[in-house]
Length: 273
Image 1: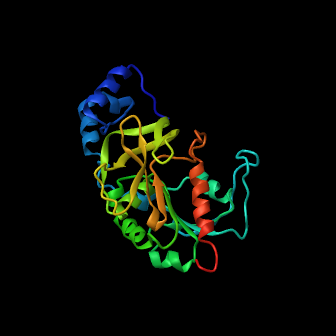
Image 2: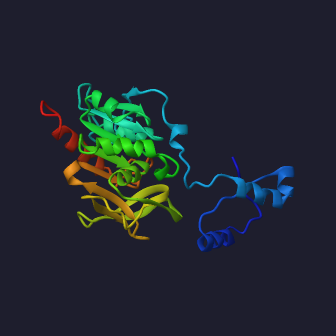
């Protein structure tokens, strides 16, 4: 664990607010006695822009996820051995996302980020999920191309990095934010219902406001800075959000998104699928 002492944290916050998010270095002991070396170390550290970190965090092999939430934690949670199959791309996936799907009776097969569209479709899923993850979304080119090939084949839901990749696959673009969104108290407006949801965020990139989504539409915006927080493409049965509806601990204002995904998946489940 790393801690800071004898630092004017308010001055640090003001500096970041003026200059934007930046690289930094923290040291202790002898290393802390050479500030110039620390500044140079920070300057030489990788810039997040253009950095594909998905390959570092994705699973090596596909696996079936069967774990659910602790009984009683989420009212109405059920599991089904023969429920519709969802293929989930692991871009750095959170376990609670998987629990939210199995809690609702879905079978989940988690696959590596490099899995091709043909391999996914060969599994005969009823839905496709794009997970959260680290790094610059525009650098994850292989997954963007795969998602472009899969759009319209089956209902698709994306969260965080998955949201950004879906937007890129639709023809949009992403930008590095001057200040990222962090924490569990971000107000997001659902433009479809007019309701405001308190949501959890952890991202430094966002879908650009001038993105051309080729038939897609913006469904959610952040009320602090008006950034895009959700999109959908009804014709392709695809939707995504930038924030984390599954946050554990909450807030849980947006858990309904998993219910909407299940409804789409079950609507596609059957001989016609």
